[in-house]
View 1 (cartoon, rainbow, N blue to C red):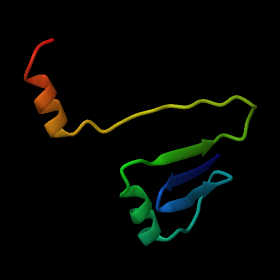
View 2 (cartoon, one colour; view 1 turned 180 degrees about the horizontal axis):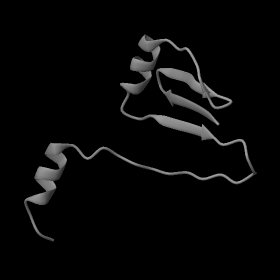
View 3 (cartoon, rainbow, N blue to C red; view 1 turned 90 degrees about the horizontal axis):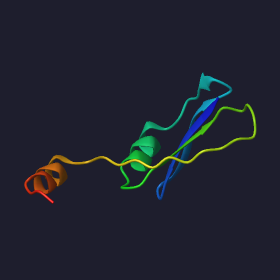
View 4 (spheres, rainbow, N blue to C red; view 1 turned 120 degrees about the vertical axis):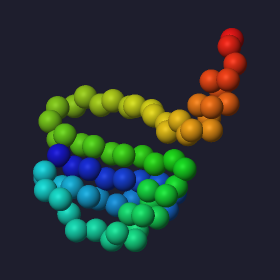
Length: 70
């Protein structure tokens, strides 16, 4: 398995061949602080692929949108 994180601040590999890698904590913090992050996971088994989208629903978003009925 291979795992990396990517954003407008760059890309960092954190796992290769199933083992954790040493990486810059400062670069990781910069990458993970961006509004949009891509998490790449390669299982290295087969040819299939998938894409998933997610979001963090903040407290304010839920509060505003939970105060009315549609």
